[in-house]
Image 1 (tube, helix red, strand yellow):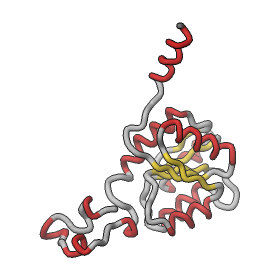
Image 2 (image 1 turned 120 degrees about the horizontal axis):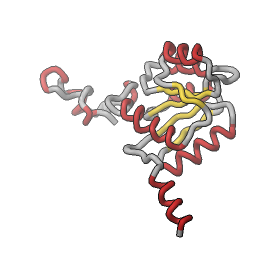
Image 3 (image 1 turned 120 degrees about the vertical axis):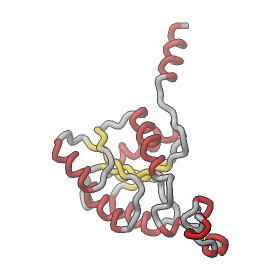
Image 4 (image 1 turned 90 degrees about the vertical axis):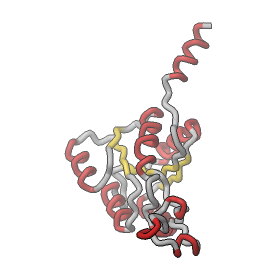
Length: 176
């Protein structure tokens, strides 16, 4: 009986998602991607995983649906997390970007903030940290589509004037 009570108590301490969360993850370490994919399934989130920044940038530049959140490793070959963040911002995508790293150097955190990374998490990323990240930052990405390709360009949305009616392509009903 004691084991069952401990299991229930442990489950009660786990954070839960408060909204849908699609996370694009970039990490060159395959095991980290596998762990994050598993973690996302256990909490009800969806992960789109890439092992390098170039592939993730190519995906984002061609995708009509943006993730709610982007999670990147900092130190990767070919394109590091800072370069990846800059490349994403050059696409005019304002989806929140957070990073995770084993690097505890304060200079890395400072550079992350300057680059546009919202928060730097330490590895290993825990389940509760992952859920907190989704609940905190995915909500920021929900307000308005960050990419014009995500707008609903139906005739109704194009005809209505955002100025005269407060609607049109700036209105949530015209977002996809």
